[in-house]
Image 1 (cartoon, rainbow, N blue to C red):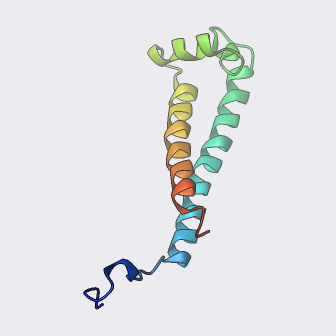
Image 2 (image 1 turned 45 degrees about the vertical axis):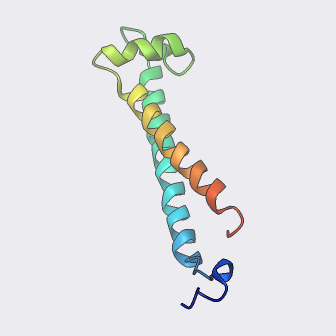
Length: 98
């Protein structure tokens, strides 16, 4: 690429197909985690000892679960936060090319 004559006119490939495929993968991860979270919420909602039936309705009990054995729900939620952050950043960075 000869950029010596007009350096501000450089042309770069956007990799549109790869970006779209990456977006599909980034989308699939939180969708999968959402299904996992729903299953855990249903399981935790069944009558049992402890406060797990309150996790889906109350942040207080959910955050308390992080120090207990039944912390699956809070772990999934933290993973969802991370995946959504990456997904949303990708969307913002590529909104003009998608």
